[in-house]
Amino acid sequence: MSARLPPSLYADTARPPADTPPLDGDKRASVCVIGGGFTGLSSALHLAQDGADVVVLEQHEPGWGASGRNGGQVNPGLKHDPDTVEKDFGPDLGGRMIRMSWNAPNVVFDLIARHQITCEASQTGTMRAAWQRNNVSDIQSAYEQGARRGMPVELLDRDAMRIKTGADRYLCALLDNRGGHVNPLGYARGMAQAAIQAGAAVHGGTPATKVWRDGAMWRVRTPSGTVTADRLIIGTNGYTDDLWPKLRRSVVPVFSGVTASEPVADAVAETIMPHRASVYELGSVTTYYRVDRSNRVVIGGRCRQSDVASPDQVPFLVNYARRLWPQLAGIKWTHGWSGQLAITPDHYPHIHEPAPGVLVCVAYNGRGVAMSTAMGPQLAKRTLGGEAAEIDMPITDLKEIPFHGLWKSAVAARLLYGRVRDYLHV
Image (tube, rainbow, N blue to C red):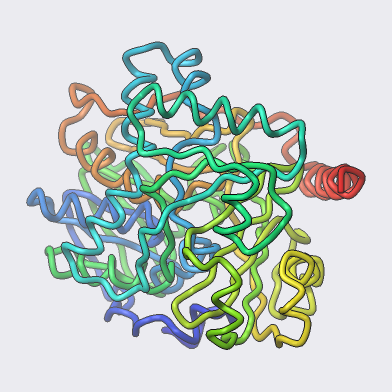
């Protein structure tokens, strides 16, 4: 099924896919997981490890969506800083949300080590960087909030950032040593293999076309068979369709574009991100980047709201990389691609229980690699334990976003506004 993957650096370099044949006929399972990205695969892995009979249905190949097409950054935390999370949800639930989400990268790297997943894993830290003076106080506040809670964080000044990044753009940054980066498609394929080895049945090329209640059971129709299950988990994120009522209109899908250079010479690589942490910038339009094990510069950010298949379609990212590091002027950019993530109005992940035995988890708001992995054991716990099983994220009502049909125009306008605003601050 790898031939179906959209073009990307990862499609060319990731480990081979696991054997995930399409569903053939009818199956009975205790849990049916719809969506073969990180949310679905991590849930299936942890369910299978707990002894559940699990079937995963994925329309394409596991990792086909944003799980296998993101920037590869394994970032700690939620969109909001810890004090805001505790203010929004209180010291008990808010505190559990903070501990779970900021520890999420450790869940990723521990899982990779335990299952020996080949995915270029590098736990070298994540830097949240400020290049505008009005963001310096945000970085300082985030550092203070993390340090107060005993997190492994450092506050880096301009000189330290110049050493860490090889660029003279940043005023300061927050370094969280739990972060890092991976080849995300390799990670998804490895997690699929681990789930299969734990006993889960993972079916690629198998879209779920209809879900309905049949007595005490749930039935899921596909083009090649049906699954009958006691419980459902839906983790379709930025590629959510109308399978479940109102779900598609509860999130805003947003494209994020990525481009990668050819491998640069060692002498050049030593002047670019020599410590190999990953970086994401504070700004009206977020830009993020890292250097992989082959000395490729991988840089991404919000892009046009349609598929990208070439670096020529994201020239602003190429130009930005050359601005950060002029020594890249003669370097060829070999890959350009995009993936569709999901955003919520409150910028928190949304977990819903819209019907008995149904659990939905979508929208990581740019923190998908770590958070979706860490949600796997949480969703498994809730699925097997029911309402008595308390998890470390809030379970909320499923609500449609007003005027959802206007999202494409709104996102395009917001991107234009953000780029102009950031340009004026240069």
